[in-house]
Image (cartoon, rainbow, N blue to C red; front, side):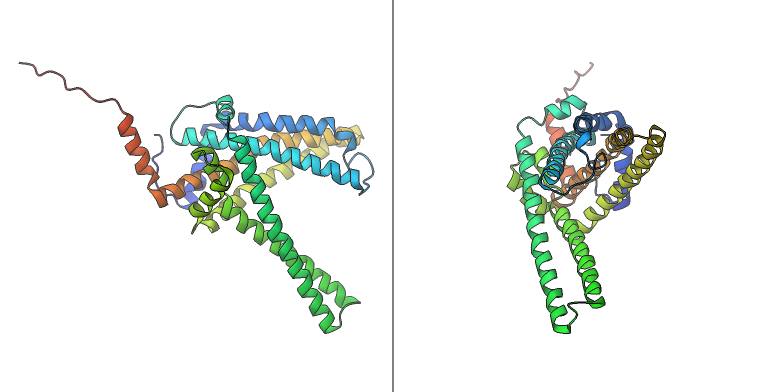
Length: 306
């Protein structure tokens, strides 16, 4: 192995993430390009119905198109994430792989990965909805009790509701994500079913969820910065055309480029966290070492020279 398996600090794990990404840049970006190109084609085919092209009417068709676009993006990027996990599993353990091998090795695992995604969204949605109800109900009781149901005080109360709800959503997202962040890795690497992968992630992420959230946020912020910069450049480049469609095309292409470059980073980082937690909790490094010793060819003693 080029890098021995051992417990890593958060800084070492981030360093390893970037090192693995740089060393295998064509592999990881190639995996991302396949699925991001599919989504880019979908965006370009439906560009005339985008809100930036015509006046936005918040009707049933608008929300239907928005939901369809979001669902398609989620499905496509989930497949890319699973293939990236396969690639990380190979290169981190010093095995050979390729873009198509990473996708091909997902055979029989895709529906389980989608099952993990469904359970995560279901749990996060239920918790978010419950907390939103509790927040609005509690603040409403306070408004009635203090007589601030109208006027400036009600504006303040609405602001409190809004900020409290956003803080709760963010906290719930981080908590739920950190709890189940390793489920896709467990599903793909250990060939577990969806619910078993969820339970496996709960066990592996225990005592390490703050670190998982920190790594995720650091890598996502880097992705957002590049996406914002690329979108800004695309907007500037589209001004001379005086055409909303041309500008939207450039913005979509910029999103394709930034997404293809940055999307693997988060998956690599979380996948390395998965292995790091297995090393810490299960001595996975020793398991790998003994497995290699068992599969190494026996050595034969050379005959003694008389």
